[in-house]
Length: 226
Image (cartoon, rainbow, N blue to C red):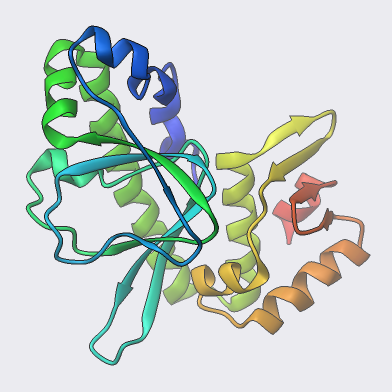
């Protein structure tokens, strides 16, 4: 993914928007809610009237086809926002949000956020860029599914993950709260076995190391060259 896809993050701290004390000063109310693993935060066709910020945990955004097959659109973690289409005229959610693990979220109503956007142009600009970024990300993912093989898709996923969530430590990059091999497989339209095999190969070559909690890229340039 290009740097254009994450430019919207610059100069905007979501904790400022979802700050209970600041919202109370503007006569706005912030709801905080916890969800158990596997619990739906919202389902498809529910009224789209809320925006969510993940405080802790992970959430997957899914669609379910007529055959009942689940398609994972994305997996989000702490600091990520979802449900934002409700402030741009979406009447009902066209997908579902499910807690991948025990998760806590902060919730604002669409009405509240629209009021904040009127008061602060920077918030309005942020969400317009957020929408544009997500559209670009979906286009790039579709191209990857059509034109790239499974190995290339998995490597591209790792590079995108580093770009979005990675923290630089010296010459290495770390992603905390690393997702499972099955989740990577769901997002890259590959098998869990393919993901596990490739990750183990990369680890044996000294390019990465990983466990259930984190991914560490030891040689980013070599990973990019594959």
